[in-house]
Image (tube, rainbow, N blue to C red; front, side):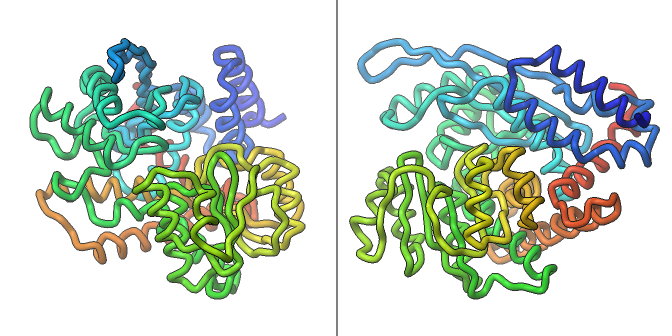
Length: 448
């Protein structure tokens, strides 16, 4: 057993003893551990400085009570979280998620992934994440506002433009960001750089709404072109129907591909003529309806209950844009048998470790979330730059910068994978490329 292997085994044992119930966090860290040994063998100074154990322990984590009053006058209580995971290369940066599944394990998993993702962008931002087990679905605007005002009253103690800059995530869109910023401004005054994903009337950036979906397709195009292929003419299966999926569908259409599916938690629609993103956008973002309504409006579409990944269909590219672990071993096997040769992750950690193993065995190329969906946080960082300058860039300028960042992320991931003997394992490449920048910053700053 090499020194690096023994070191990682000891760190893993310690982590399992500390956090045995945090399954999502442990999965993310174990995925990372599986790729980092060659880096430690080449850089024994990382072992000496115990960088890995320091990296996987958040710098700080907050959990707090969020009391609020519903429309019937009843007092409700939710939990709020913010994990500031690693700030070695810049202020903590990561979204807020409002969903019943949110707990400390989920937030730590997302925060850990965010550290590596933010590093890959090449921009000076560290990693963090937060949220609440509050569910905005079915709540009135007044209830959402009152919850958020209570949530931000506590959160504002821990964030700031040069400290920690939250953004949106699942359950946190433009409405929620507006309420969050309004409460922060009431308490702390005008500081537009404290949140990103803001409305254009109060410091937001053009192209921020489209950024994650557009960025996913820019990464996908870069990956395909490196294999001598192109998106033009490709058939794509997409899961999800939220912000990421909608704009991924739009950009895929612009690049000449046909998207065949979209889904939500109840089921999915299949349209052989190609999904019309404008209809999905109307249903999900304006009417806040269910994806099955798409089939009521488009005669060529059909609706099915269950997972889109259990539906047999011939296609080339899979873009999971819904939630974590949505593709398991059986779905991955079906995906490969349907002819897909590329999977690029629009959602965070959508493929289980068993699914990833199937992709390796069947030569399906995987673009991991920390690389493929980094477009959102990249444009969030560009929004921070615009706020600092008190300027607004054009949509074209932001979009061009986004495309360049995503191409660079693919290049970094591909080159790191090749350098450390992982071939076309872009998950390993992204882990390595993201880690090395953070590691060098931590090493330079001493034991803190």
